[in-house]
Length: 367
Length: 266
Image 1 (cartoon, one colour):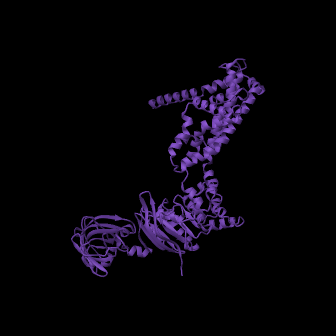
Image 2 (tube, chains in turn orange, green):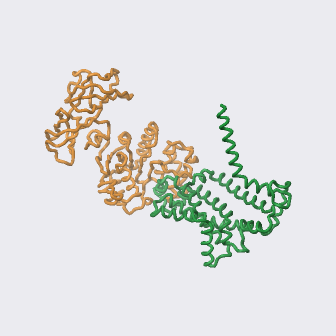
Image 3 (cartoon, chains in turn red, orange):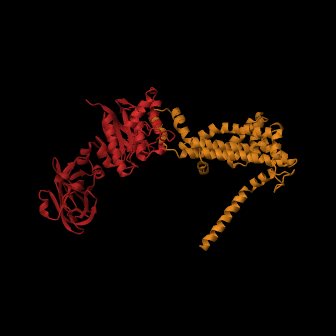
């Protein structure tokens, strides 16, 4: 049975009158990769810093390997951390940076050089041991920071948005690198980011936070397919949102009126017991809507509308259409079109048909 | 073309005049020190190094210079730990009443030297320690401490605040973090501040004048005493030696840490 490496029970952090983290609870199994995802100011970094021990929760308790760590100083916790701005020691070489935690944690001095070169090899920096930090490129500095965080074989690795400042290509390369190293060493990892793509790519488990609260805690695929509330639906992926009113509730699905249309969708339970007449929000992802010039091609789709193309944005691997559908309100509907073999595109102002399946419309009860 | 030429002429005239004005006192003293005559004069009367030979033989001046060096060293010894810690604390931590402390620390700088000099004279007089060199060292440290604090805190302010947290997560305790991470990172500021303190203390005249007695005069006071009797070119030669020491310190500073940090310190 896998055991819980990190868990939080009703953790709260209050700065003066402001609650940065409210009543957060989660559990993370050993060897897994968790990403805390949220916009800036959502409390994700505060939660990470409490786990690291830099902040003490005002309420609740954090457990590492089953032990409450509230009274344990950060330097007594077995946690390696990669910081947002890396925080490498500028007056030391790459190898000295990596050796520093070993010296501080009183490893046998004779084993230190071997260990340092082993970890520099792991992050593919062999040969650059004696470079000073400012003589290394951004990507190489990232690797030094990873080696420094892992060299003493911590129980837990924390990543505080270390990839945020990198350009896209390097960022995607480093995401895969994190994933490779994490799998190779099997170290339990908590990553913090505002980049939903990164979260989906690297994680076993995702926690979405907003305004200090955990919105959803699930695996990447569940998080993507079954968002629990409108915030998650909007934050992950490109989503069309509607405001309306609940008209009929059955066991699994619900009917709601959005604009002039009555639509059937899957009811995503909030904490509130849904009742007819309540305010409701709908969400359908851009890639789950089909677009066509002829109505016959949309056979089998539950919801179908006619509209006009308001914008066409070529994104390389896909085309983003914005389509005005009078029945669904003022805001144009965003649709991704991925057809690899069909280069035919719809023109601006062209009349088109769009449609989706009922199982792809999420209906949330507004709170 | 023509206007840009005129502009350039005006520009360089102003620059040249400014540089001349700034360096005039040094040039006059330098020139006067090389005179072969017996009175201090500019332009010098002939060229010789005899007054440099002369000051080597003057025991009073040599001893006064030695005392000034001791005072400067004491000043650095006192200001190094206090200024370093205060500079780091003010830059890095949100100290309670931080701005009040900052103002307080800068106070000696805003009080006219004659005022703080008299205060220090009364204080050390009461304590019965006048007649020693170390009170002068402490006095110059107190008066010039803001420079040390400036130098260190400008160095500390540019540090990534996560650096100390990173040291903690590497397993270093607070003391190890200070000596292994914080202190090395502010070393350029500490070196700058120390050299600055050394020069300022070496040159300090007014406060020294109030705190010395006839047995322990420092070099600036010795020169001043000499001017009041007969002005001979050996004083110019001593002044040049003085300027040379300060220049060497500045060059050392530039070689060790670069002058940018000194110029940056607000």
